[in-house]
Image (cartoon, rainbow, N blue to C red; front, side, top):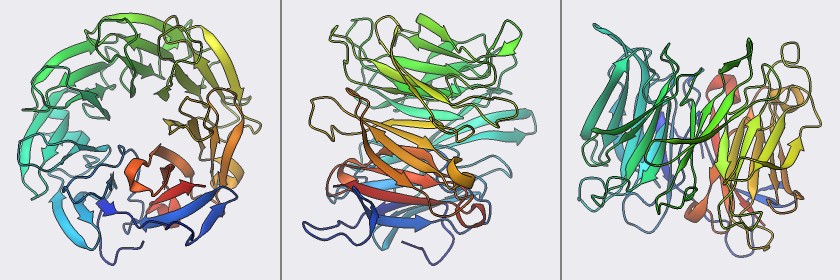
Length: 409
């Protein structure tokens, strides 16, 4: 769906494929449900966004997405504008991450979290996280510490503070001391907990996990892809308790492969009663990171490697994003989506594998060079008439970006 005027944060009600028809077959096993495009050149619609959510209570799930280089924001449902905002600062990356969340302020509607991690104020560079109502007003704003990149990554944390309101894990990976992850109260934006990394880019990525340590609370994985080990950039991934303690830390095997840049929760694959996870080391340009990208399937309890997936193509950034989808093959565990946005001249591709058997269930291949299909992926949930995923083409049509919803059939 191409919107007819500039909008850089968009929430759209999605159009169902219907029981027997498919408006456009996107692969042998997927149907393109809808597509919407950014309008600002190099605006990069779809850098990072959360799963769809019914924000206005009409029974339809909306997708929320931002174009971080455009500087304005809005929320849309179907053909009606829900809200519109403008970033307060030039070059703040307003919309770097956008997340739809359940009602924060008790007005009966869902709300939207928008980050602005690179703001330069009079007192220096600080990241900002904003919570907005659908009427366009701001519920709260939290300003991070100096030079931390507060808000670079944000995910829903569940109700960690026990007040009945959804909280947030917020990454701040830019500090010279190594990076931080904060638990931010959804009620008022206050900082409830800080986890200090002490290593390069700690908090670049955060993946909510199940209960790893058995204390009844959901834990998290924290990526530090810039961590230096023995003089080379190896990257690390830490699994942390919701209390803030680090349960264990893993280090990448190869230099310059960005181990820990992306992770996602998986179901219990090794039958030990603890949920497992996947973590990627996608590499980069072949000249600096030769060899294929890889994705490790890990035991959540111990970090032990259960399986290894490797890319057949050097330099495609296999695993630049990971997402846990629904159980597509009916084997009782949710499956794994993998983005490779630099495949085939950066046209990109998406691969969905059975988390239990590694079998490829879906392959969606980009047709346009330099469009970067597969830059970010989330589960579609109720945004699709059947199981599916939401995926961005970050560099599509001169960097404007585009977001698509595909139903798996």
